[in-house]
Image (cartoon, rainbow, N blue to C red; front, side, top):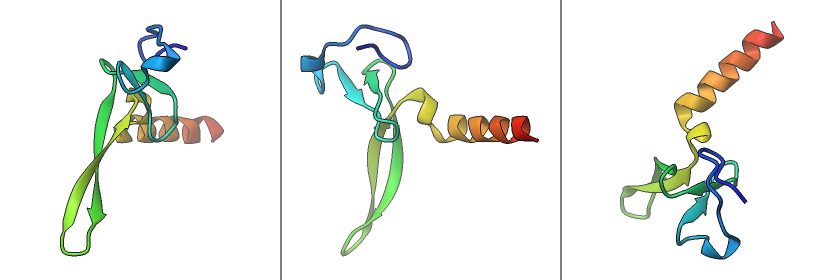
Length: 75
């Protein structure tokens, strides 16, 4: 198994120790390449921020750029 961003070899038994899975695309990402996106969660008494791990390809700017390029290719 390899990191989706840098290609580093990852071992299955080290999940959570040296690498995590992207919350959006579920691909493996090493701790050097993982990024975090904050999402607002409504609680019972107040709102709070929950951070989720994502790969560099699933960051909001990257996703919007890929969608825009895909739409331009279709036209």
